[in-house]
Image (tube, rainbow, N blue to C red; front, side, top):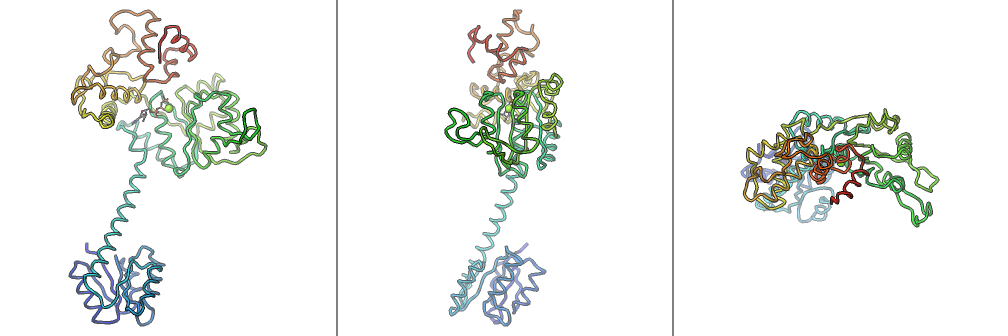
Length: 447
Ligand SMILES: Nc1ncnc2c1ncn2[C@@H]1O[C@H](COP(=O)(O)OP(=O)(O)OP(=O)(O)O)[C@@H](O)[C@H]1O
Ligand SMILES: [Mg+2]
């Protein structure tokens, strides 16, 4: 459709000639001879651009400009002025005119100004649309997968993002809990406020409290200045409590208090401060069982578990394996600057047969390594780790010679330490992290 212009000009010959020139340039042009009729027209038709003379019978051009801008702030208006009233014309720019032209009007000039104005507007509109698309796709595009499990998870995230409800993410190691936590935050009204991830198992117990709540100067030896805690940093945004299952009883009690009244009290501070936080927690433990066994407070569990999102293990959504593998292939071939484009069919079979105890993270690591060592544009079985060719490592007996329990444990540690967390490795072996550490030390296994 042609762009539609309105000319407001009481000098008939000038109005006519402008109309002729601009029509010839491909615009659809209406002309009126007073501001009153221009206002009436503009009510019914969204003109792409309005050109008005300053001096008109009745309401003048500047007043018309003001009224138009009040009603339609985006309306583009160009002012026609006689040389004598050039100061008024400059003033009109301040009132929101796009530009002005001085009489006598040179046709080329008016055509150029009109063209520029409409082009700029089109660009602007395009930017707004682009920006909106980027925002909408933010983080969801990073979640790769087409299985029902993943698509319905994304739907659920979209549904709950905007509420303030606390969210509990459950899933094995490497299933994408942190990825989803970010998606919840960045698709909520809190997106402009901080997303503060806190790994409850990585910060030593005695430091965690001061990290979370902050402290005042002199609260303890070494507190030479006051420090804001992470909860206060996160005010207005979301706190991601990763591995919440690792939280000590003492800190569970303190966290419960925050969730009850949204107040925090820094160490050594007397005054409580209000905070507005949405909590997103994650764990790869069976936290309900921990509750039953008295290891995790039931009251706290109910407060964080308003919405539960379960992340399915990769072996339960095999249709995503190849999609994810291709996604990582593209990512790493780009990052590493190697044109590896294909995965050989027999390599795909191996990926599909494997049980993926380290889930997406393990797949990601394996593809990165494969791209690194590939010597052509294709990944072949020889570029994949031995474990994939041996089948499920949980089932002993698939390897060449029988292993003692000790050797089996050692093999597992070596196989998995790169691709899963300490915690998960320990769980897989059915031992504590401390025991895992001791075994490593005894056998001289480096991380
Ligand atoms: N659906 C997915 N699409 C793309 N990348 C994914 C997907 N799921 C996970 N990843 C990637 O896998 C890696 C592990 O994900 P993430 O850190 O979110 O897992 P996690 O569940 O928090 O693991 P852990 O319990 O070990 O902390 C990240 O690099 C993440 O970007
Ligand atoms: Mg994580």
